[in-house]
Length: 202
Image (cartoon, rainbow, N blue to C red; front, side, top):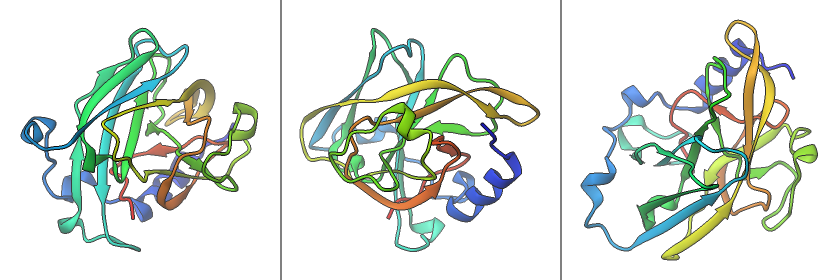
């Protein structure tokens, strides 16, 4: 697999707004009293100790004003026993992206990000790893839910990627059943979706 770091950086610079210039993040603790809330569980095989963090950032299409982006992120949690659960304000599931760091990852220069939908797929379509690695575009943005409790199976697999200085172990992460998604559809390399800053969803 060939992931050109300079190309990735250039691509992300055009699609993402640096978190440093965005509105100050709202911590999960400041929204403890927000209602309703959703218990969101991700189930995943062979990813014990993987660190997961949720973010939600909604902007105006096609390009959000950095000062007006409604940004939120969760604390980092680890996968234990094949699952990880977050209790989040339900409204924050809209425009949600999921960053995953596996114990085996080398210095990739980006954060592995869950693909909610790949190009050519429709909501409800199933996709395998063999299919995912052929894809060229994906959405990091979930449309969200209104339910109080949701379980989402995900796939995280070790793959070889071009890191900052050399080929290293990296990850591909996706939902095996295509979910409702938001724009933009971003370019991916062999199905791998990586982020260097906040994903602004529309």
